[in-house]
Image (cartoon, helix red, strand yellow):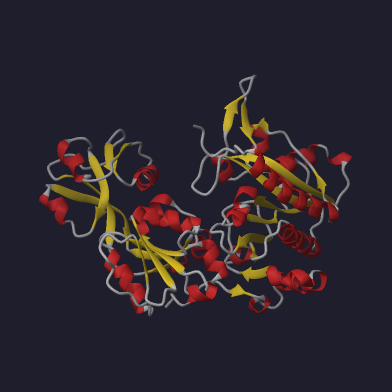
Length: 201
Length: 278
């Protein structure tokens, strides 16, 4: 039997819609057991891996998964060597700069401290402005950095802006907008192009 | 522990050698001669033909006299430097192969130290030379014992002739920004009068036995600035990353003050042998 087509799905808020996308393409899947890391479709032609969104690009690049779904923010942040096949349209967010609503001077200055999970995107953004800022890498609850004064600004993904508002922060500039995208491994793309073609349109 | 370097015990080494011996035989039977270059060289001279990528990814250190030295990150430019400097001792066209460890900063898809095997065909800018090098690459893959593989072939003009927007989308492989996917398939997708059509006509005559291994990909585009013509990648079914690549770089040697056309390929040996481990 042909080996199954392996698909990497992002854990978290993009998961349901990502799986729905493949269901719409005719993949039949029973309920996914909770805590499952791997599951198959009914025909056993597809194997799904549930991955952390930031790991999806790693798996796709190495060809351990043939296709994967994650936000374009992760592609922009890590610049992986793979093919971005399609904008899936859901999971809208924007990567934005935000700060304490009470901060008096909301312009950017050399030496500003900026806390973020998105170190590369942040560096690129400020480099383009010709500004040298100190970037502090964080792994979660980035808002706290601006609230507590760990940093002057934060750069983070914002969907509605509700969390920011509740925490007394305000968005000052958008760096880029992002939605979920379908990614394809380069070797799979070229050797299995007839399969890839089915996911276009 | 130092990561991404080659520590190989005898059993594994002898398996690697079997494959390497067969590849060397293949080069020799095609009248390619082996060349070697220094493991490290002065950065300023060697990097003349490099783009941003190699400048950033190469590993440098300070030499005895305080100048910057660099561990060779690939073999094409050290050979260009050497051949240019000593061109009067060589005849052209010159057919060379190499089999050396090269060094780059650690990356998700490769080690820091890895064995590169490749060939250079220097001083011949004909389509025949392009056919010859692609066919040699196919012979090398076959001689290594690999069965399910393809060489995907494109041409730099397929992205260079496009608008800036399309070109950027092709280079960054953001196909979501294209109106439709680039054509990919057998020779039937090639536009009349295109370079690749001519290539295919000659390939069919000169290497019909290797035609099965060729797939044309009109979307191939590279950030590497030195390619000027045909470009290609080696794809093995079941190995998830590109194991080798090559193309024509007719302006590279000028950077080393010896203006000759050149075409070649390089195979990442550590990537290639994952085929046998799978």
